[in-house]
Image (cartoon, rainbow, N blue to C red; front, top):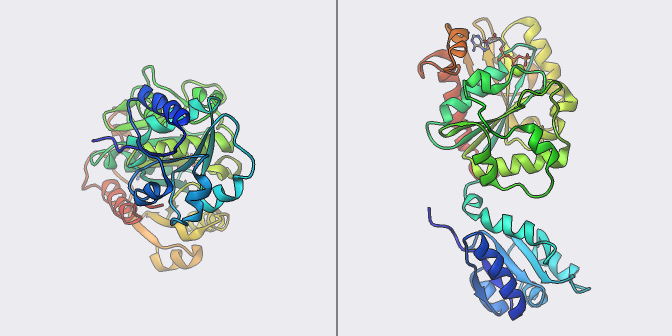
Length: 349
Ligand SMILES: Nc1ncnc2c1ncn2[C@@H]1O[C@H](COP(=O)(O)OP(=O)(O)OP(=O)(O)O)[C@@H](O)[C@H]1O
Ligand SMILES: [Mg+2]
């Protein structure tokens, strides 16, 4: 893929040189415009627009439409009085050089990824043992036929999604490493760092005695880097509210696995009542005996797919083949139905 060029708008030769040097160090080169009119003409194309502190007031006065990826750059501390025009312009980040060089280099190096931006799908068990982890693995396994996927193990009490999928850990990066790192995480570093089998990557714990998730800021950083670097991110959410809180809000769709039994549905009703935004959630019913409409009514959520239990599943997982053995099996078809929904979500989210 051709790397899209960022845009730099500044008439300050020193700032232009600083940014160009940084960009060159990560293999990219910005298109430079020296006035606000040139900025406005090219406003929509580039994935990242860097506006020099010298031009921010003029640019804001032209009132361009809102867009993402606008960064205010200044050589040295930001001069006072620029906050208002920066807000008017929709600036998402302010970078003072040279202290912000690391952040800017990562953002510039990530441009190839910035054009990707896949969906994030969370999978949650309506009741314990409903098959959520297995379904998350199945979604990842199927979607990997179309492009890069990351399956994120976010349940500290789960079996480890690398095991369920049969992906060797090798030297790959796990949560432990990400928990101790700070700052902007590059989409490429994450994609290339985690254990993978071809397009299918897994983020999990590497032999931790007491697995735990990082804090909300770090989780947000990881999910956004994962989203930028993959076509689809699947998150196996913990059933415990504390462990899943920070991640739930980042999901474009939450798939709730429901055992089609009286107690399974009762437990799911509680689990769904605790969802902040049920508009983004849907159900996968597991079992023969369930009245779809009654379950949808009780939970207030639509049924995305239903399936009976998949024969031979434990053997396939034990052999390291992942849960989906045949695309036409129960699990494969239900996962495909949910993936169809996912592509309908669009990439704008
Ligand atoms: N679609 C399925 N067909 C047959 N067996 C399944 C299916 N999904 C899961 N199982 C089996 O049920 C058990 C529990 O599955 P899984 O770990 O995926 O559930 P869970 O909802 O993630 O559980 P937990 O509440 O512990 O997180 C496993 O032994 C798994 O092999
Ligand atoms: Mg689980």
